[in-house]
Length: 156
Image 1: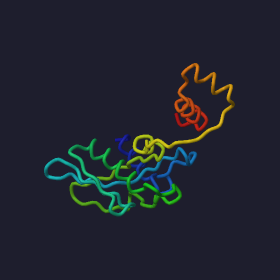
Image 2: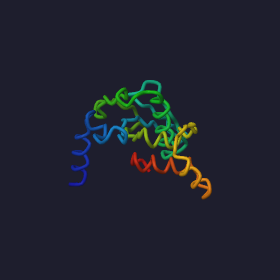
Image 3: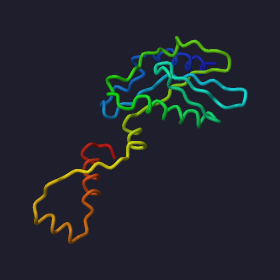
């Protein structure tokens, strides 16, 4: 019984302001309240109240959750993080029969790593002696630059 009271208390502490991780904006994670509707077939239809028209579906809860995370990413594509809506209070969302609310996590960084993999050509300048030495060692310039940027930006 005490455990149930604790769960209720935790739910009551979820507010719109708490739905955004307060960390570095490059690494920010957003938590969107999402309505999962269980269909008669056992599949799930999913609606994101903060993102009108952002819907998904899945044959299982796991697939529906994953599809919803991708749908949120598609919806937010091209928007700056300052434009991401995070205003719904999960406690105020009306539910119908066979529906429940879950928070779906969205990380711009993780979404981009998975979906925005298009290669971009960059021109760089290094001293001739360094270039000659690297070429003799068959160094992959693109690979080294990617590794260095990931380390510098701490986005491994």
